[in-house]
Image (cartoon, rainbow, N blue to C red; front, side, top):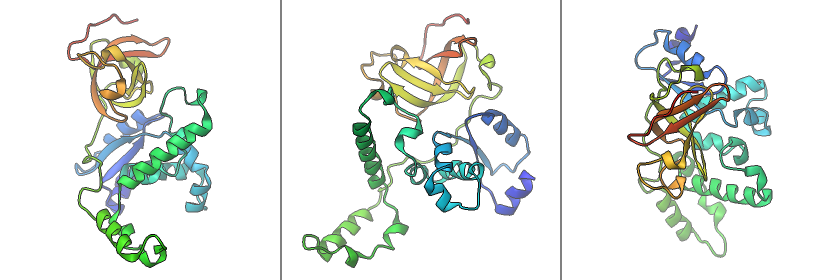
Length: 260
C-alpha cells in the first residue's frame, strides 16, 4: 500500500513524526524496500496537536479530523517549517525554560517579535509577484519608495536557512534500554536552558547535556555553543532507565560513568 502510494504520487521524502511510535514507524517504513531515491526523515511533532484542533486547521481542512490535520502539519514542516510553525502559538512549540513562571504578556510580546523577525528574514518570490504596490501608497510612502522596498526583497540570499541535510538516528537504538554508556550517537538539540541542553537521540526520552559537558572549553552560556535543532554527536555518560534519565556529553573525550 505504501509503496503503491509512493509510486502514484511520485513521493520524494516521507516525514515521520518523532513522538509515540515514531522510531518504530521509521523502522517499518525503511524496511519496505522503497526506491533508493526516497528519503525517510524524522520531524518534530511539537505543537502539531495544537494546530490540528485550531481554527486555522479547521478552515484549511474542514472535512478532515484532527489526526489527518496533524499528519499534514508534520509533512508541511519538512517542506517549509517556518510557514507551518507560524500558525501555532510559539508557547505550544515546547521549547524554553520555565515559560510558565514568567510574565505571560511580556513572554507573548517577545515571542511575537521573534516570530515576526524570522518571517521578515524569509522573503518568498511567488508572494511578492502578487503584491499590488498601489494599494500601499500613503502620504509618507510613495510608489518609488515601495518599488525600492520590493527591489530589496528580491535580492539573492534572502533565505537564511541552510541547505537541507537528511538526518537519521542510530540503527538499533530505539528505547532507553538500548542505550549504554560509551555509545556515540547522533542527535538533535531540542531544548536549551541555563544549565545545558537536551538532545533527542531517538529513544522517546531526551538526554541532558550539562553545561560543563557542552564543549572542551569553559562555557558561560549554552546558547553560545549550541542552537535549537542543531544536529550533534553525543557520547552517553550515564543511563538511569528506572528514572528515565540519560546523561550525555558533547566533549571529544568525556570522562565515562557507570550505568545505573
